[in-house]
Length: 278
Image (cartoon, rainbow, N blue to C red; front, side, top):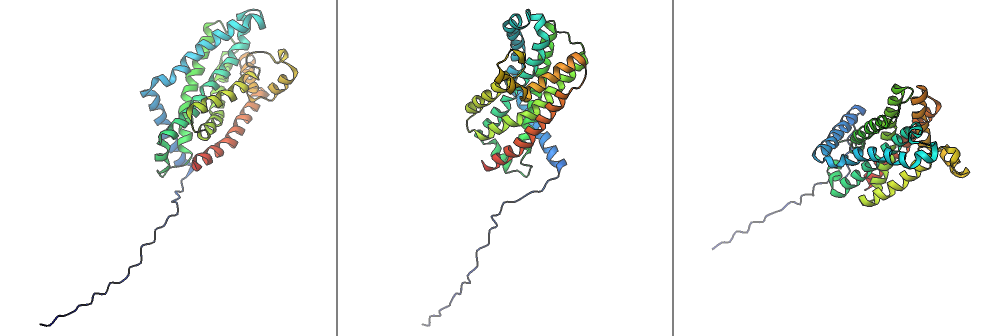
């Protein structure tokens, strides 16, 4: 019996080269804007499904003016009614800024839950999820500002120029939307939402109370008066008071706008870069 041996030659096949370089999707400014608006719509749907997220934007603007008016009215101006021209513009800025803290907390919760991991895997602008969250937060600021205006008029506040006062409220909403990049940076830097809220409130307390929002600068110690002079919140409060009493856009309004743009210029790229690193 003859045995035939067949030799099988196996050719070595080189393994396929895997390109591990990250894919970079180049987007236009218009595409990034559209994606940011889509993310903002997502944030508004969150408010719709969880309306309790808006409770602080509804209740604090009611409690704040009543509480501060009762405490500081007699001590500073002799009566609550005489204190209203100082109180209402100041508390408008203070409470709307307080509403911005929730934006950073919500960002931290989204990062911790893994939602942003899904966004990073999508071919969208890296700034779109953050910008969308900030634009959705502007809805909170509008609600808070509107409530403060209504409560102020209910308490007897009558500005000399009502249209100017309403324009000041719009300025506060726009400036707060810009300043909220600061709280967004805290939200993407700190890992726990509770710590984000604590750090944001610490920053907010300094900005709010080291300003002319509730008391005149003349009644402050000399060193605190100098701090208030350079506090962007003081510029914003003075701008609203000028609009309400004179109906004119003063120098303080331009300084408030410049300070808001400076916050965006500094903290917007820092926030996007920090989120990318995380």
